[in-house]
Length: 395
Image (tube, rainbow, N blue to C red):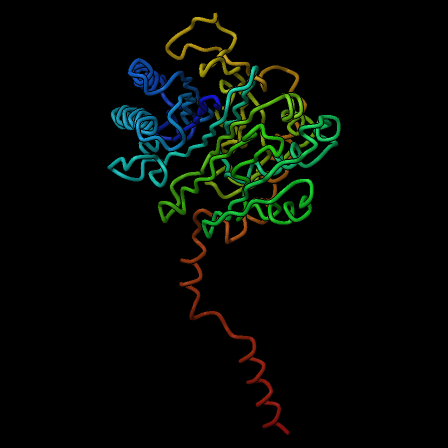
């Protein structure tokens, strides 16, 4: 008989911030913690941790209720409703921004908050890594995950680990048409990359081991502007990863962020390209042009369905101390390169490639400008025909 599967859920939302898109007020974080403490006491969840990246509140939860569970998602919804109410009472910026509906319908899908969840049988040792990002979109994870799961020059385990060598199934979502396709690596590596290179449309949703280990990584791919029908805010995606023993090691998951400055869409007004800036949650406030896009990575061990960090083993009520992987001066060069690349992009002003292409702009004044100029545009084909007729008359 197989062991009971544990579910790890991360649900996030931006429901208000102090001074523009900076950070949530501490009272909002405490309110979320109080609600999840009650949910833990009631047996809805096994354990939790409340954190943030930039202005986004992130809820890490473990439970045995499976993905898209009404009670688990309901607890998260209650957290964001309470936090939004506090934000509105303090007149914080973008209070309630990611709340797109008044009624909870059973899970947060389509309601505004983003979510990533995975269910699996807990191994003898289960290292978890939580990547959380601000000021960017779901496809921001496509390049680092491609390097981690498709590139042996990043992940040596793809060559030397017998189980990792069996490969992975990559679920790719077409976020525009709401479709998905599952492709296999390494056999279809080049075809996978041909899709993922179009970051405006395709994004990795889930990666599964082909060695029977189960899910390796899952990403929130909720697109706020598609859900709301207008620009609300960036999607600020999260990614849960399992590490070691047939999966990429902790160091292999971190490697892409050390050696490469990655350009991702988002940044100011959700309409620019900026470089991923690896940092601690406490250093994730946007300080340069509403960014640059931040990414944090926090680690926990899973211990019989509960989160084990650096705190004493009997800690309760979400008072955990995660391993903060992007904290410290090891990442100073990567951060410096991110700022250098972002400054260069800013030097291009309102010209591409600093700003996104028209199909990717979350909002733009261009349609209004074009409407005003409709009567002033001259069809060059008509102009050529008129000149041709004049030349004939002269003859």
